[in-house]
Image (cartoon, rainbow, N blue to C red; front, side, top):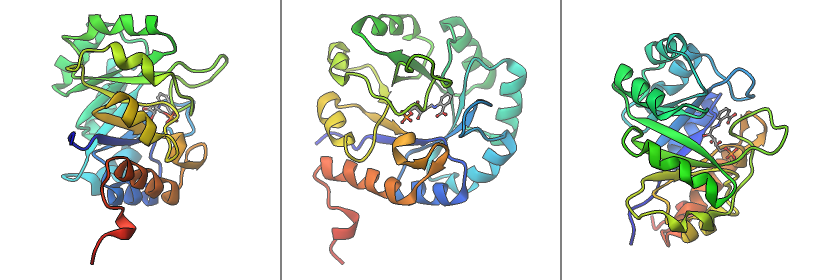
Length: 226
Ligand SMILES: O=C(O)c1ccccc1NCC(=O)[C@H](O)[C@H](O)COP(=O)(O)O
């Protein structure tokens, strides 16, 4: 059987959500630093929320075309394990960020068609991991967290050694199919585990982890032998 996929739950804004995500067994917690997002948190608030995750899951700071001074504040207050660059950062910028902070960088790509995958080649030597998200719908305010999926079959052309997280509209109802189709080594969800934009729902979070376990043929947490 494949290794269990990394699971990142993104856009955490409350202690209850952090507890639910850690309880589910997330490998990564994501905090959003983008003022227009309903999931935006300050670096200081993210640092407080992330405290219980230390040593249990990797803390990821999600930024969008951030300048050095903003990244300096985030890194100082949050001490993230990963930086996720979710804007239009060019390979040179990814390299600069990675070198400046000495942290691994996950670079996001907006995917709608096969042609959108051509961009990844230029990042092969500068990004530690890729994240494939759906291209935002026309008129969307946010570059991520839109709850829309792309055609996962597009990823079948990738070499097996391309390390990526799959995101975009994942929820408990479709994550099993997404894993089956892509074999992704990492998955990322945000709005699919919310009851309203920016409000994570512990029951939906639990259902998401159960769906991943079910897809892997693992015992469900409610059905484990005592
Ligand atoms: O989630 C946001 O509000 C957001 C805002 C600005 C940049 C990135 C953002 N999210 C990044 C993520 O990694 C999300 O988890 C990813 O886009 C998937 O979101 P969803 O489709 O809602 O599951």
